[in-house]
Image (tube, rainbow, N blue to C red):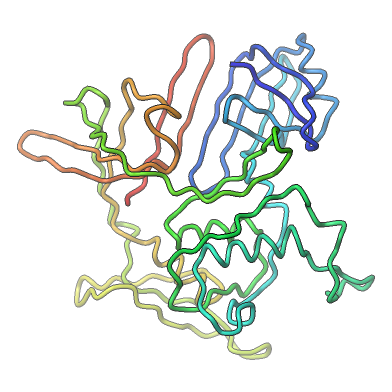
Length: 339
């Protein structure tokens, strides 16, 4: 498949009908990667070397070029389009102040932050202090943000005690909303489009006995699990640091396992504690199933493992797809997460 190369204004700069190799690592709720090798003798190499801000598109797979190495060939390193969210900063905040003490859903908070960052960014004066004005130089008119997102409201406020990239906060909010996200480089409408990814639950049962999977491996890991945690915080500017406790579940006695959370602030610490769970999952390779046809990012599949008299069904979400194309060989590797 051709790789089409655009500038950030959606102008087509070149078409590469062939590459030496390409590897796409697509992600459900984080930044994916791209690595492509191009022959230096191809005209497309000149275009890639002469332009700093380019987007590479291969079908519906897209990446922003973030690095180049020219040696025996031209190596292009890229990041998925949502990498652009790492280029904006969100200062410490509390949604209690944003929404007049009203609880909101994680998606509503994400949309609010996206609007604050790309549509109404704060202007700063010559001393670096925030003003009440909008920084028009930071506004991105072509950045499209969903309007009606809904979702179940949280039973608490959401905040950050330190500055984070917009990407980090969006990832955390999507985890709370049980969804993923992406940014689409829409060359037809000439827009950068932010989207939540929900995926769908497929009827497909994946197993070796159904002949649509091979190299199935069952893994269980309790090493990372914790039922409660402590995080360090300061109650005031000149106050000494102290520890606060967060419970997660109802485990008791010998089954109550604690951990130390490196997070700054209760909201982030609570999110990090939720990630410390017992993992029982399967690793496998698909046989005869194609990305974009039989499954998509975020879809949920039922994986069946069968070892002698032991059988287990596991619902897993597709959170990563690695697509490799080199020297006439093509492969897809899947990364799952528990539902």
